[in-house]
Image (spheres, rainbow, N blue to C red):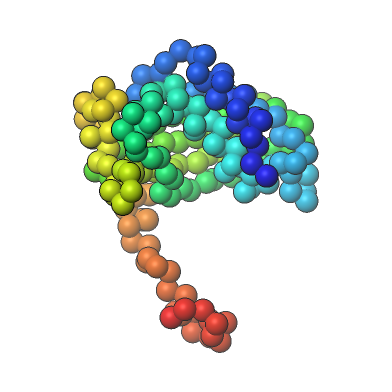
Length: 191
């Protein structure tokens, strides 16, 4: 189940917090509750992605992203991500989440989020977000979106590791070539 009560609490706090500049950092503190756990009594990897919403959406509120989206009838959708897990977050453990926008290119906004416990990074996510128009309007160019937010300047240079991820993802076949496995496991799958 989606953590609606926690999400509502974070949204209310974000609305009361000071506005952030376009590349500002949003920091929030959370706890790993029993319903966030996997069988090994640590934060479930799928739940990690859900809990990242508790940082990303409030960050978007503080940056003015949600106001701009609402005013223009646009949407905000995750278009890809990569997560690196390094430390466990255990039951009832508090953790700090750090969320920020890194920059943009001609199609996407790039953001990073991380969870920290006792001064160590537990996990780190790179994601790209697309701003989408109304019914069937497609992707809104990030430069147009940033200008609508009152930030017409060019993006800062994206870090090399982000550019490498973008390039690697562009080489990934889409749709996946399931039939290339070369065995009978694919008999019931589309060609």
